[in-house]
Length: 83
Image 1 (cartoon, one colour):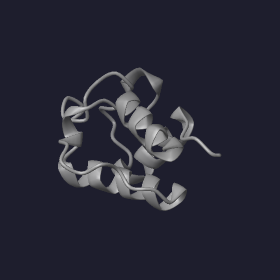
Image 2 (tube, rainbow, N blue to C red):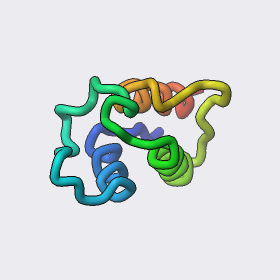
Image 3 (cartoon, rainbow, N blue to C red):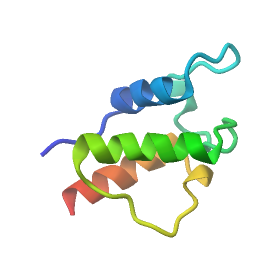
Image 4 (cartoon, one colour):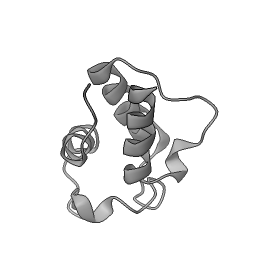
């Protein structure tokens, strides 16, 4: 069974968001909501889609993922992978 790691999420986030001189994408952002990081909903959707594609699972629907943190996103994804 595979799990999603912090390093994988950081790499995907860097790919989706690109270079931003005002934001360093590393472990320091793990506990800030995507909204506070100024990620728009399309960025969050793209990050989720890439994780789903890489690991063949689906995130639960009906949740505002912009309001959660990257650490919470990893936890939700890994819960889905183990269920």
